[in-house]
Image (cartoon, rainbow, N blue to C red; front, side, top):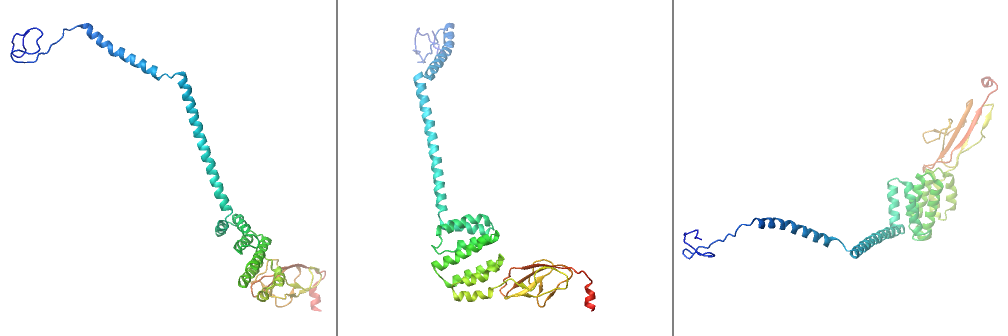
Length: 312
């Protein structure tokens, strides 16, 4: 055995060179069986590891039941939690809804919003609820009744509109009795009667008014239906009609159309012509109140030549 560095002769089994002190590397003898064993060891070791892991992962029957129970309990708790959460949400919404339902300001606000948007049908429930929260004569706030009257006018429910305005007057009289406010309410009532063509009730309402000062201011609003001196029907001779109205100026038409201030103003007796005459007459006063119309039909049928009588 020689040193690979200096070439000195060395004893077998030496680790260092005695001459140059070079460390010697001992190479073991080659054995083919060792290589085969080394090549097989990793495969066998891998198989053993996989089998061990498989055994560890394979649950024991008792452990499997325990895991199933735990999983079932988890889902039950989760479902219960969500159910409680949903119930709480429903309760919260119901509570808020009930709070709004019983809140006068909220109901009145919603009613106003619907009125401003011209959603009169939708405004009714809110305004009715607002009024019910006040009571008939408590609180003294008549705005819900005023708005209800306006909504009913727009919905062509004139009787209900009139009832609401009358209730507003009663509430104001019972709670505050403010003469100025009462006067305003009566004037609004006059306009409502004119708008809904119920002016035939004006005289009755004025007579029922208990406040002399207000009653005096309502007198110019009086209006009554015109009257005619001849009953409607069929005539075989010339007919002239005389109309009278205690309040206001009379306007009329003979074709059945509704009279206005632009129609014929009555100033002298009306001469009817042969055939059918559809008289429609109203009285209009200085306050613009229009009376209930007088409507009558006259038919003139001549069995002889009326011109001959005129010549005679």
